[in-house]
Every structure is written in structure tokens, then in C-alpha cells.
Length: 77
Image 1: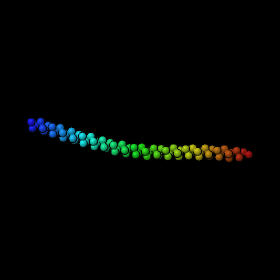
Image 2: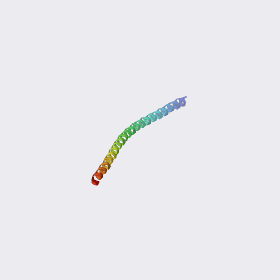
Image 3: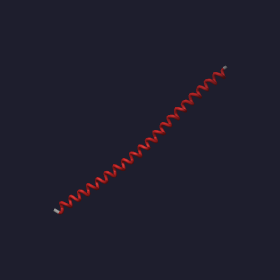
Image 4: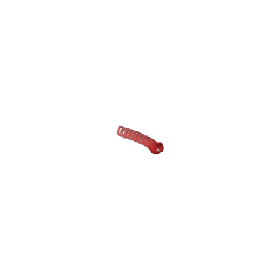
């Protein structure tokens, strides 16, 4: 009968330890996911900024082409 209770206690201790490790891992993974979400948001902001800069550079290049065309027309006259 003594071994029966010691087996039950051993099982409960093992189950409790396993439960503690699983919940700790889940909490750690939750923290990692939140950190990754923050990094992704920063990257998204950087990406949006790069797109805006690229658009402005394209606009400037187009304006320079237009100015060059106008200057060439004036120099021909």
C-alpha cells in the first residue's frame, strides 16, 4: 500500500513539473511573438518610408526630364 501512494505522489510531482515547464515555455513563446510583432511593425514603417522616398525620387527625376526638355527647346530657338 505504501508503494501505491508513493507512485501516486511521484506521478503528481512529475505531472506538476511537466505542467510548469509547458506553461513557462508558452509564456516565453508569447513574449517572443510580441517582440517579433514589434520588429515587424518597425520594418513595415521603414518599408513605407522607403516607398515614399522612392516615389519622391521618381517625381524629381520626372521633373528633371521635363526641365531638360524645356531647356533643349529654348536652346534650339
